[in-house]
Length: 85
Ligand SMILES: [Zn+2]
Image 1 (cartoon, rainbow, N blue to C red):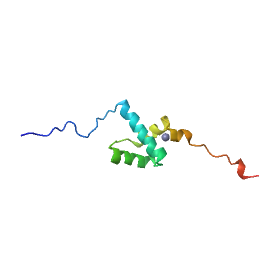
Image 2: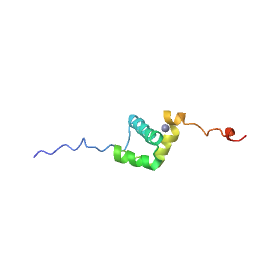
Image 3: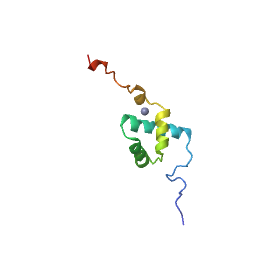
Image 4: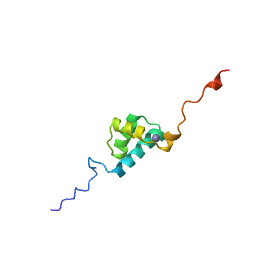
């Protein structure tokens, strides 16, 4: 009887390596900032498309603690002084 090795299955360990976290943060930002998904949709996309479980709280932290080029250049409120005279 030869059984197939199940050790190298698809399940990721609960603890993530820093490199994985970097990758996940990158994904979170590209989904949220570039594609404009909400946090909840970002979470679902991570899970279904990438097999990554991430809580909404963790996603929020990823977004607030790190900047990608997209959120770095996002303009603040445009000045309105123009509109009235
Ligand atoms: Zn971003």
